[in-house]
Image (cartoon, rainbow, N blue to C red; front, side, top):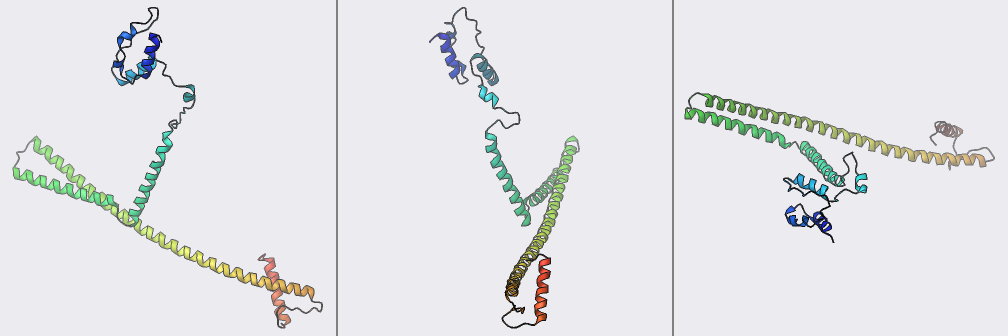
Length: 252
């Protein structure tokens, strides 16, 4: 193996550590070969640049062709999206559960934080009065800071109250919609049971009428035997009238 191939082999297997490559390895190269002695890099970016320029560490054509401009070239992106989606779903479910139970944590946190900030500002005002600090730029700036903290505390308390009111209104709407949903579900079930009973009655009447139609075709005397017992012509006419109406409405 020639000296140049040894040097390229070392560059290929070097792990960003240029101290492993001795400068004496460059002395044995051919004089007719044009090369430049690589300068010692100062940053990691320079190290990567020198490595790509000095040896044959280039991307393959297949890898270049597989690149996309839509941000999905990294195969790890789908793997990262799934846990993020599940986490977002968990947060949404958790928020809905807390809202339905009437316990939104941000409201209580904001109120407690505002109360603590107000108490801290009040204690600082009292300590300034006890110390009897002389009026000046320090006292003015300190008082302005305390006023800002007091305003922040009041704002936090108002935010907590607004969140609490929003939670109560959401609970009322949720209860109303749940009650309405249950009522509608009950009505649908009742109508379904009524529909089943009506269908059974229609099937029974249809069987009776089919039997009467057969008897009409078979009976030669012209008397209709719709039932086991003898029925009057009025009853038979009413049954056939009902049957004809059902046929017109395409119930059967």
